Image (cartoon, rainbow, N blue to C red; front, side, top):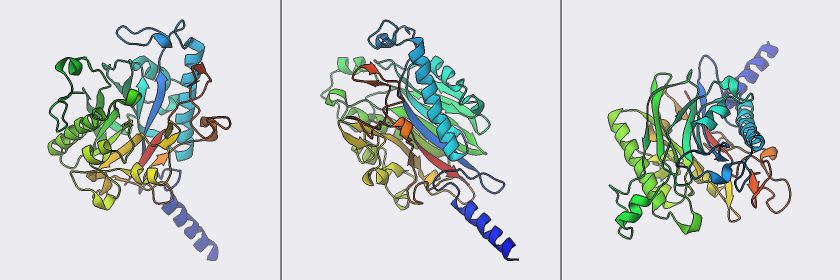
Length: 363
């Protein structure tokens, strides 16, 4: 009798602990899915795309971007995705990506032997970014049933931000990444996923541009909530801002605690994680989380029996920054920071200057 009692207790503990720090719970009574984002750091192919500023990523360009380097980069990206699957016991259901040149590089990525079995499908639009990089979405069609997608361009209006210092010529000439939106169902529930790569901080620019990018996402998200009552929305991307910055707190209405979230807000799980010392990248020597995921009230305070965001780390934090020793510099000036593809202009064969982030939803 004691043996059966101990077996039952062990089984109960295993079930209740699943999904809090690693493996994703699956079974007849629960469904759990991983949703994440990864900045792939300049995933360019070796060919020139007309209209794109990809010249440094050509065999005769500044980076001497050869087929061998490209293949090494693709294998590295696939290795990270596969390692996340090994940690979680399941492939990402949805994975947003940024800093990709075109659809071709994503087709090569999903065909990599390390991740080919995941059968990832692709949502991608060619965008107008002056550097030639886009965002994209990888998804498993047996989980996420794609119904519609769109590419949201960066516009300066309608906005509550004052852009009077910009001339019409400057506005017309400005080019940045579009925001990707994909809408569909997971187990019969309506979802929308936004993937963004907001304007960079290079040269101290973007103080108003990133809030405007967040405003564009928020406006469309609120429209979707009107069009599809009960829809569950995930916003992810390299925001080039921290969760504590105004773009995320004011213009995305990001809240630190689930209890604070209303239908006009988003739960921002990486806000508390940043305050606790977590980092997804380092900028000018300081740790940041620019790789942000937010969820609307429909996922934060979900109705019973429907998908809801789950705690992952220490049964307290609802997001995870994924890093492993092989993805991290182990010595030298940049010890403890992401092991990237290039350093000081030299190819060093690393992974990305960002760590991926993810959340888990469960019902």
